[in-house]
Image (cartoon, rainbow, N blue to C red; front, side):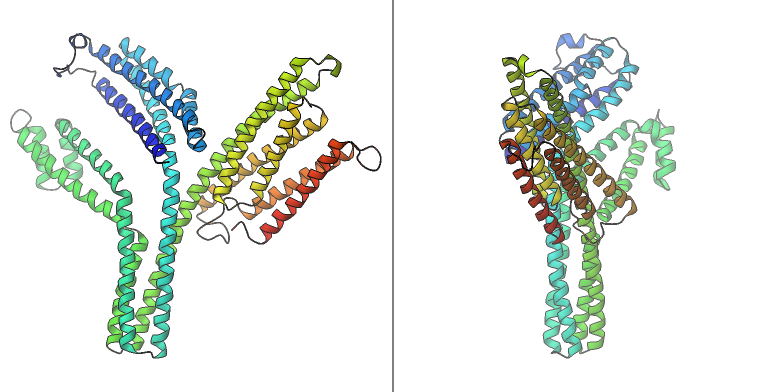
Length: 562
């Protein structure tokens, strides 16, 4: 697992490096590539090239690196398919997205444009390419985001558990304060609980700092780079920046730095720039501190202060005043808990949105594959039995293999739902779908392409369409709730993947499919009961399916989706 994560990070870093290199390259184009090469280590042949030819050469290297990166991604997908199918699917999706966006082809086109000295057109193409490269980078790094979401939720849940214990202890101390327990003992317990509350606040602060440390370092580097760039462009920007952001002496120095370009520009421009950077650095640092502080952390600090005041009141034997401070501390603790629950709910909603989108993409792919199998089955069945040859069996076997591939995709989707563990009817629907697919695999392997096989395939297609529509509606409902700022009714801070109504609709769809298949089988029975062994077996499976639908409905009524 650790090796796989390292590879994902390496791929992301490689793509990020290509993106940065490409952007930096076209920054030179924006300046018309006027500056000559100063590096003495450059080959003499490269020094003899024109600026546009040098840009084309650098872009050629980027295009070649990207082609190699695509190859490595495919190779890693093959190697990790057995041990980590989810990562393999992610890597394949990244390559497919790259092919779909024609990134490699567009890089080659940029090489041609630069070689022809068509810099303005190259710049326009580069901006669009940057967006697609960023999207690809985000996709490659999305696996880490999913894991981070799980870790962050677990961390917040632990905070809430610790906070619930503190609230329980504070209520106990408050009750004993009102009830007339020993003041000294109560004061000691109150002081210890205040320290415990402060420790939890410090833990939140430390965890928040370690979580954002790498991002802040990256941000700091970016600002430094921007600062240097601003220094280079100080001749053009000093006056406007001085008017907008400087006060008093700093603004005057910034303007003088521009006006004295021929004489004292260097010294005064540096002073204006340093003053501005210092002020911006302080403001940025203060802003980062304000943003990084967890709202719940502030509430805990306030609760700690109230507990300390209650401790002092108890030491002074002022029970009524102590009880009031304890009540204020409890209010702050409850507010902190509400803040944490809101954070947890938002994290869970992000996780749900990602999972629903992933599942919808998978089932759309399965629907397309199943449609191809169904069309192939109809085509084979249209051939009269007397005219069927060995090629007919080979083609049916090929369709059976294709159906097996769909079963693999279903297993992956089912694994995602089981890992989430909050849905009841949806996994059952997928399992029934998989059972039907396995029947189709078996029947097609025997070249049985008749009405029973076609009927099962039609049920599979209907089930896949229902699943896609259900997932689309679940995503829309989630987005509507987020826009309206309200959680799922009765689900608190940790909502299930799909709500109760979606589960009920899925159970209804399962029952409708059983009814439809029962009606279809009844038309195949000649006489009072079925004699065909295949039909008898199909009816037995249908009875088992009805029993499973009953169990799912019962589990849903017992709240096992919560």
